[in-house]
Amino acid sequence: MQNITIAIDGFSSTGKSTVAKQLAKHLGYVYVDTGAMYRAVTLYAMQNGLIDAEAFNVETLVDHLPEINISFKFNAELGFAEVYLNGVNIEKDIRTLEVSSFVSQVAAISEVRQKLVEQQQKMGADKGVVMDGRDIGTVVFPDAELKLFMTATAETRAQRRFKELIERGDQVAYEDVLNNVKERDYIDSNREDSPLVKADDAIEIDNSDLTFEEQFEKILQLVKSVI
Ligand code: C5P
Image (cartoon, rainbow, N blue to C red):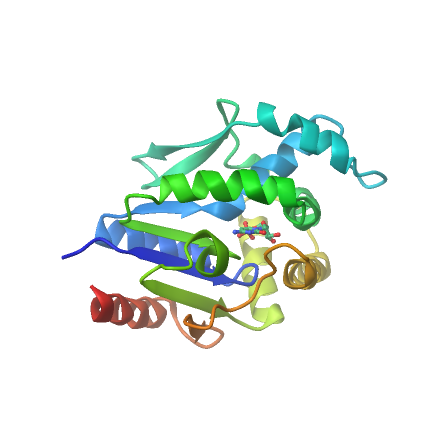
């Protein structure tokens, strides 16, 4: 069985990472959460006073890029790799609504994308990888053997995200989560550099009305058809 590259792109909170993690585990592949990398740069900018509700210092953030070191370390208990920023585990800190509210602005900066795409290409160079994000099938691995594009209605996605945030103890309002989902969709789809678009050869999966098991089975069949 040959090792392939599986690119999973799509809008925010479509369940890409849940399915990608499960798929990587099933196939014995490496899973790379590229959204976590953009979130890590955003957290760095927040921690260093380069971004807040009033100001966003793009030039200074670009100057700081060489100091931002993002890495992943496999956590056997959780069964996936957690993200580290300059050696510190930030897996929980990057999932807040505050980080979500700034991340799309940070991800629209070309210099940020250039740095992270280069690292992602190195991480997936040996194939046997499931990578999820917004530009994996179009920019990072345009030759990926299998490309999936996940969609679901904004309301379905916001409900899922809201439930996740409440379960981890965050005090958030559903309306704010829904607005954030819509805002990120808009910025991600309309930015100049690597906008979120479905690659011509990607297979679209609308999971609004699919259970996780139905979706996973469907994807597994697609994987089997190419390996
Ligand atoms: O996947 P997740 O929702 O964690 O991604 C957070 C944000 O990072 C996205 O809304 C998008 O702005 C950015 N992103 C990106 N390109 C990727 C992955 C994420 O621009 N490959």
